[in-house]
Image 1: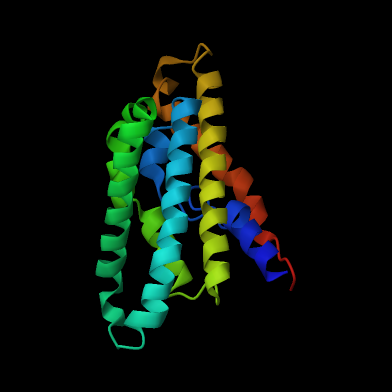
Image 2 (image 1 turned 60 degrees about the horizontal axis):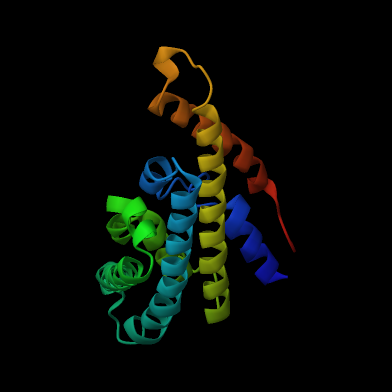
Length: 195
């Protein structure tokens, strides 16, 4: 039952974009087109899972036993930067269209606070207690990130077709739509599974 609670939390009730408001830069910058949003979501999910895969054992089995917990942020950022570099090279070689669609936002995954946030939550803040739960939380959080990116891109594509008042066109309507999405997702914060 704990795994189900972790999945619901990662996707809905503790969504990184709309509830924790982490990772807003790609959310607002890449969500203009559904293809780019899906690609960014998959890339972020991939990096989140790999971050949990590497950072959890590093923290629990290396940093804590040696008394070096204070190095966590440096270690996490080095791991994340390495993973993003690998992802960038793979996309550039095998999926150049997606690589160019993501533009500057792909290398910015390195400094995306959602990625660092998932590493912090599964280790230092002990949001999960086992390695499997850490991996599930990373995957669920990435799926939640992707879900919100795709919903936002669909809404933005639809809103762009409307004849809006001049002060609302562009970025202002995007912020309004994001606010309504955040309010919609906030209703999931009261869910208590397996209490």
